Image (cartoon, rainbow, N blue to C red):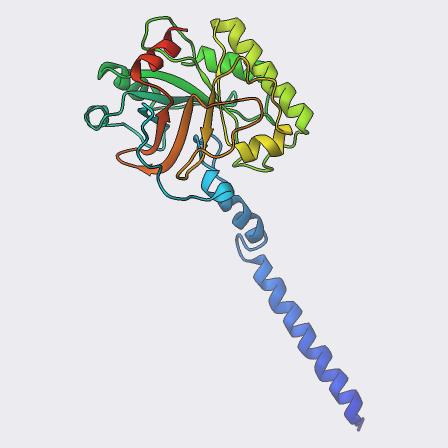
Length: 281
């Protein structure tokens, strides 16, 4: 009869245990969905295309401080909304002192906000000055193509004293790399293409919504749009902080994502007559 020596016995037992573990592991991988579990976790962390909204990345990248104190400077309260808010109670917002709004119309060249009509027309019907914004995805199509899509799907403008120029919402990419895979020069070119096409279609210079930290990271703090395009800056803190290069002041400031009724609240840097002046061009 063959007898295993002690060292051989240990090696035999180790090999047997290893084989058993490999067999169990193979069975686990064969279970439905197990092979793609890691991919599923990653996908779950990425929001669905079309769900992006103004200021979505501010807290994660810039943090959130306190609310701004009352100012002696005259400012006008406004809100921004998207499908995230659904049907909005505009009468309650008006009663609370809100006098202007921006409503998400489009994203990329693949998404229209299904609540846009209720939001855009509802704010107008209670007396607000309102406009539309476009969430940019520079990694999907050209700036010009997205400007056309925006204008064709709610982002137009008319001189009626109630319609604000369209907004280019350019900020952190919620679906991937912060700068959408573009170099700083490439991002500036993309933005310029969007702004030029929007102006050629509407006759207006679009408002730029961004955060200073994103603008610095992804455009190299480019200052070339400040002379023509109003700035809407995002910073959830007691003061507006440092502005992107070139702009000496802001036109609008998104100061919180947790305000009453709809969350996102803003201050226009001036009285209501200045809001109307921006609408009229």
